[in-house]
Structure formats: structure tokens, C-alpha cells
Image 1 (cartoon, rainbow over the protein chains, first blue to last red):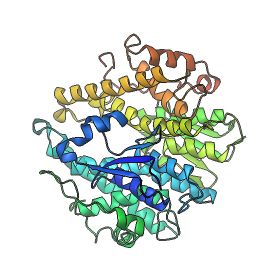
Image 2 (cartoon, chains in turn green, red):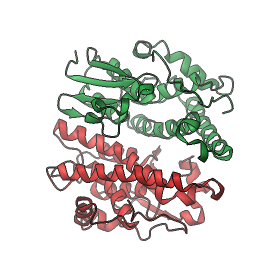
Image 3 (cartoon, rainbow over the protein chains, first blue to last red):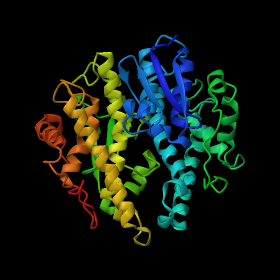
Image 4 (cartoon, chains in turn green, blue):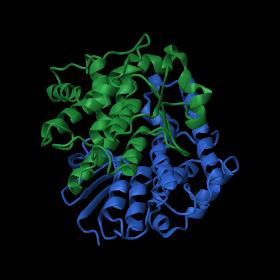
Length: 224
Length: 224
């Protein structure tokens, strides 16, 4: 039981979701889980700002330890609870290096997805340009192809071979998010298969977002 | 000696520089070090693309292992050479958590700095808006204040107390870069002190960028 842990999260946010997956994988159930609502601006409220001064979710506290960067939380939990639950770091040096690489590359995938999906949401109307959105779409297409390629070359069904690692906990929520935002399954068969296969994994099933944040003006990914 | 390692780097790039600092700290001298030139577009050349398909520097190879995400390379080197050179990860749980947090937050600082400094370089002329640049400057100001605050609250001269850690290796190059781009020392006295104190650290002195990438149109940080 993890009663000394508190996670503030928003539904449909891949950074929040990856932390929830790792908490499940490490058998850290029973933490204080509080869902906040982006649509009400609760991520900018005092409860979050106290823990995460950037006003972002997740916001995570373990006793006196505060750690908010989502990939950092995943690393912290795995390191702190090495012998508990699923072992999320490979023993093999080369696999471990690849896991580290993929995990950090998650930032690139996430950022490029946000630059497309939230274009109208983030850029004030007077500053929007079709050419900019088009460029963002092209950058995301190149990025998504990279990940399709990584899975094609993997020696197993996961990002780093035959075992589920931190890399999957970090990346899977972004992949699921892309498909929720209409990424084409036919164009990216390996990613689609990965998305489908991992859906039934207990840690993922249990933490599946109750809703996706969908304000008006979101850009769908069907052209990617 | 680290003859089985190759680092492709560009001068004045904080992500490249942090890797060079860690290589020094871990006594991994003697690696194949090759400086490439952003101004000649060499980061998009075949030598880089083979190792790093995003066409970014650093590009790093150790034997058959390829790892390009700069913070990831730092973590990999520390993990692989735990008992060699400077120990860059604190023993204490809370300090280690803070180190992980600060290290990942480095992405936020770097990204916000780039959004200002390279605004004219990254955004085509027809898409530029003074209001957007102003917003980027405000976001960077909030961010830089956070780091001034972190150092004010630190129990030592480093980001996580009394010892130089991976967090410093990751963040210092960004701080030095901000001052090289005219961040005001009087507005941020703690950051200025940190910048000055660490300048003489051997790993930093030895890897100091021979030049800063300075194409026309860069935005100086004197208003931040």
C-alpha cells in the first residue's frame, strides 16, 4: 500500500497516465489519487501550484519528496522499488541503453503530437498560419514513422524486445493517445498492433483514461 | 580510455556540452570526438543521420550501442561507469529524487530558452508575431525565476546541495548559455554566482565551447 503517495492527475494526459501505469506495475496501489479537470483550469489551481509550480499535471508527492516530471517519476519509482512488482529495467546493457534512449525520445513524440493536436488551442487566432500547422503535421509524420520503424525492428512485441519496460510505460500512453485522436491504423500497422496488444495488460486496462480532453478546435491526426 | 566511444557534437549546444562534461567527470577521456558545424548543416548530414535519424546533435555511439538523447546519454554513462570518476548520483533518497526532477526539468528550461533566442531563426518571416515572441519571453522569465529560486533554496552551491550531480552536468550548460546570450546577472544573482563558480571546474573548463552558434537574428535575453 502506498498511502504516503499522492498523485494529482488529469484524464487523457499521457504524462499522467504513464505514472499510473508504473504505480500499478510496481504494486503501489492505494495511493491518494485525485483526478483534476483541465477544462476547469484546475491544473493551475493552488493545490497543484504548491507541488508543481509550472501548473502542470501530473503533480506527485511521496512523503516529503516532490517529483513532477513524468518520466522522472517513473524512473524514481522503479529505482525506489526495484525488488517489487514488475522489473521495468532490462539487465542487459544494450537493452537498458535502448530503454533509456526510447524513454527520453518520448518527449519528442509527445511534443510533436501536441504541436498538431492542440495547434488551435495553443496559438491565438490572430497568430495562426496554415503553413505552420502543415509544417507541424509533417514533423509529426516523420516522428511517427520513426516509432513504426522501431517496433518493426524490435525483437519482441515491446519497444525493447520481449519484456515490458519503462520505455513502454512512458510511450504507450502517447501511442494510445495518437490513435484516440484518429491516427490511421492502416498507415501504421505495427503501432496499431502495439496499441491493441497492450490494451489488455492489467496495469493499462486498470488505468485507462475515463475521458480524453476534447475542447473544440482539436486537430485530428487522420492526415499524419 | 574510451576509444570505443564516438561523440559527434556542435559547439555551443547545451545538449552536446552536458555529455562532454559527464565524459570528463567519469574519466572517459580519449573518445572519438568530432566537432560538426550547425552553420554548414552538418547535423543533417549522412554521418549524423546514420546514428541519429532526427538529424540532431549530440549523436553518440559506444560499441554497438547508440544513444542520442543527451540526458539519456548522461544517465547511461553514470550507470555504466558507477565506480569510476565522480559519483554523479546522490546516495540519499530525497536528494536523488530531486536530482532526477531537476535533470528532467532541464528540458523545460532549454525549450523555453530556444523559443526566445531562436524565434526568428525557427519561425518563417511571414509567420512571426511580436505578441508570440513576447509570450515566449514571459514564459522564459517565469522559468528562469524558478531556477533562481531553486538555487536560493539549495543547501549547497549546487542544484542538489553540496555535491555536483548529474543535475548540474545537465543544467549548467543551459545556464552558461543563457548568460552568453545576455541574461542579466543583476536580476538573477544566484544563477550568476552558480555560472561563475562552476566555470573553473575542470570538466567544465576543459569542455568550454570554442564558439557559440550565432546566426543573424538571434534574440538576446537582456529583457528576461
